[in-house]
Amino acid sequence: MRFSTSTIVLALPLLAAAESPLDQYKAKFQNFLGSFAGTAGGAAVPQADEVPQQKPIVSDTESATSSSVEPKHIERLTLANWKDTLYAPVQPEATTPEEWWVLVTGGNKTCFGRCGPVEKAFGETVEKFSTIPNSPHVAVLDCEEEPVLCNVWSAGASSLWVFDMLPPPAAVDVYWKRLNFTTITAADLLETFDKETTEGKEAAGFQLVEGALHPFDGTLARYNLAVPIAYALHYLSIIPSWAMMLFVSFFSRTMMNRSVGGAQNRRANPARGAAPGDGRS
Image (cartoon, rainbow, N blue to C red; front, side, top):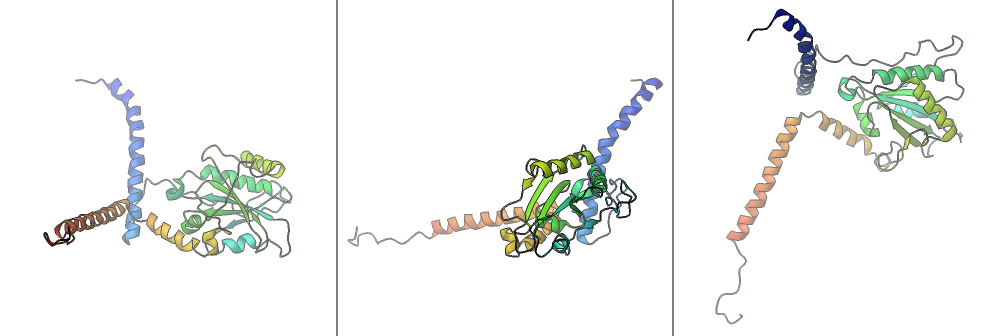
């Protein structure tokens, strides 16, 4: 079959568009090889096609809406400092809670490179907060850098967490809300803040965190089990899927062999009954 030159020229855009899904799968495969090599202690695989990692939101020196207003300081939460940071502005005799807004974000592995719009919207909201009296304190938790802390909270990237902090041993109310990766804007977050202030957090779309997984008052936190379990979940998450499948296969085969072997032994050694003709039947 012959193809004219014009037909080939018209088909080039289609071929270029068809390559983009292949490039995405190639990038994901290279990411997998890179993470496996890092886990095994080998050299990292070059990741030229990897989606660029989203970088910190706004620096503390970025200008606010007015030069006379001091910009809010954005705290970076880590496993070592998060409790001290959240309790820092709380006065010992306070009865009104200090409110914190914490953006949970991530990078290529935890947010698939899609947290850029969320971080931008949060940064613009923080600038607006600088001009609003009694606006919340602000912080960021990056699940790419602090995966264990995200497990302690059971938090995922692209979510907003609100902490109402009172001096210990008072209970801490914690709320969270999922944020849309692509459509979220600073106007949406400011509307959420206005609605929260006037109608309450539930009306603004926040969900109250309760039960054993509560970061401060849950059962796991009270018995100091949250961090060990978070570490265990983190290490399980970095095990390659093929290794986990291999372990499950060996484990299931071992259990089946034991079950079948026990049944065969019971058939080969039946319980001894009375001898025939001994007058007891």
